[in-house]
Image (tube, rainbow, N blue to C red):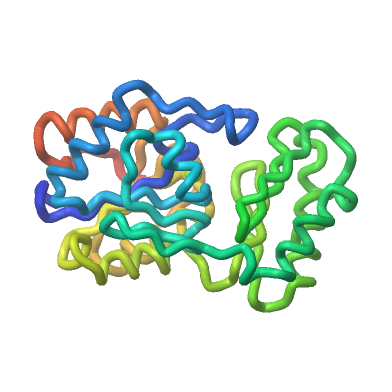
Length: 250
Ligand SMILES: [Mg+2]
């Protein structure tokens, strides 16, 4: 059982720390969560990072005034020990051209949302589920049209195009080679397809993988809802100990 002080804690954001909302900007961070995470980070000697498809700037907006170490855009950008390794949209002219042209290529429906993240783009259809098949096919074609430097990442009512080198598994592995994350037992908690790549990394390093919510997974353990995870995080922070043994097997 990982003891506090020996863990590195990696946390997805949407669907994990917060409930998914109809629109990405509408998610609500529970009062107390930022301070709970800050307490855990301090107890873990700084070894806590958010690992999200969101940009780090967006995560900061949700967690201010705290600025947690983080991997944004599935690892395209990261902040480690407070130092930002940003993505540069100017490095991605082909992707930028595609994003600029997107509004003319998508089905005209107010529920189809474009989330421009600079070095990646997400198309959301939570408000227009009837477009799932059409949009998935379209985004697949667009990603393929960009060539091997880019890839498709499917998620819950979202499809994203991002630089091919980026994955949550890759960035977690990178963090685990850097202080203060190195030499610790990795614990990664996530809820979606993109997190399965992180679970694979953590499983391969004798860490602990935890899936929030239902669905097939390679994670070892499961927590039913973001609210239940927040309760666990509060308990871990107040006990001073990451207690994963009591969690259900996945
Ligand atoms: Mg998620």
